[in-house]
Image (cartoon, rainbow, N blue to C red; front, side, top):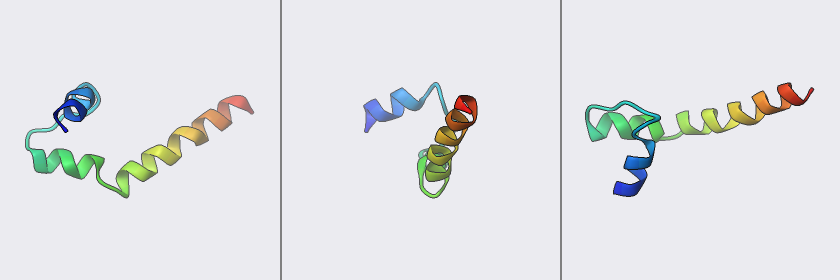
Length: 45
């Protein structure tokens, strides 16, 4: 878990572990995952 937090440190700013968990917790993480493929499809078209 520590390695996971260190990896995402550059992508997310968090003050408390609770705030951090809210960011990576679904459904927010799911929407981010769905947004990425949509952008790629738009670029291809």
